[in-house]
Every structure is written in C-alpha cells, then in structure tokens.
Length: 204
Image 1 (cartoon, one colour):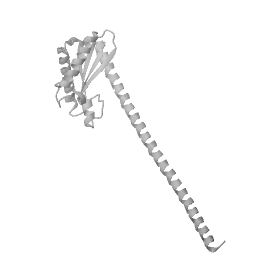
Image 2 (tube, rainbow, N blue to C red; image 1 turned 135 degrees about the horizontal axis):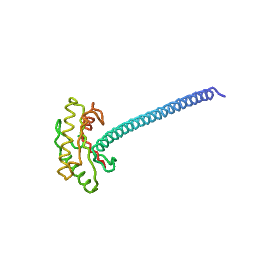
Image 3 (tube, rainbow, N blue to C red; image 1 turned 90 degrees about the vertical axis):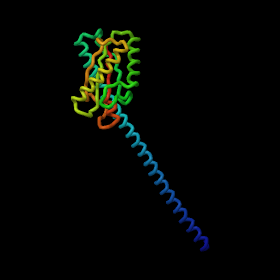
Image 4 (cartoon, one colour; image 1 turned 90 degrees about the horizontal axis):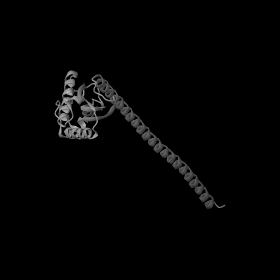
C-alpha cells in the first residue's frame, strides 16, 4: 500500500470511529430526552390524579355535610309532627356566587327570586304534601353571633318570598347555621361566596 493510500485509509477510519462515537452520543442523548419527556408526562398524570383525589375528597365532604344538615332537618320536622313519610327528597341551594346576596344584607336579588319562583312552580306541580326547612348560612366574616342573625334573616327572606308564591307558611320552617357549616374555604373570595347561601331542604 502506498503512503497516500495508507494515510487516506487511516483518516477514513478515524472519521468512521468519530461518526460511530457521535452516533452513540446522539442515541444516548435521544434516550435521555425521551426519558425526560416520559418523566414529565408521568409527573403531569400524578398531578392530575392528585387533583382528582382532592376534588373527590371535597365532594365527599360536601355530601357528608348535606347528609348531616338534611338529617337534622328530618329530626326537627319529625319532632314538629310535620312529615307524612319522614324522608329527604332534595335540596335547592341559593349561594352568593350564583344569586348574589348583598353584603351584610338579606334582600333577595332578582336571580334569587327567579330561582325561588321556579322552585315554587315545581312544588305546586308535584302537588305533594312536602315540608321545607330553609337553612341560612354565612361566611366567616364578622362575629359568630352576627352571622347567626344574618343567616336567619336570609332564610326568613326566602320563606316570605315562597309564601307570596302560595307555599303555605305552616309547611316551612327556618334555621340558621351561621358560619358553622362552610362548603368551601373561607380564606378565598370564591369560597366565601359559596358559603354565603340559603339551602332549602325538601322533606316529605
């Protein structure tokens, strides 16, 4: 083999080895990048699962609270001799994030009156001998005694409106929980809006 030919072969070998080395490095980098992508996706999935678990926990807590207040309403109605069957039918909730209760006031908004008029029509259409417990709730702003009064005033405003819709007064009662039964975090504006509410528990 001549010297130029030998030199070219050597250079070609070096280039080939360099290419293989570069290819191996690129492969490692590609695998490393793909692992990072998969890790990122797994992390995202874990976050979504955690979010779903948290949401389910909130739902379970809310259901437990509804069952608790509905059970208390049943006991009060039974004690008053108001029930025919003694069972919970459904609950209608007017919360500040949807019907806008005025701050520190009990006046019903047009949105709340519309929801109540629809409820009254439903009750009259079903034509059942139902009993309503109207529960007033507030957020944690202000002192507990004030919030209990405000909850009662809001519940009573609902009772008066339903009475004007031909729902018999003797088939309705009011109770205030004040700030004691929150359904959301009182540390956020959205949570406080959800806690300012009136729940109408329909019993038969």
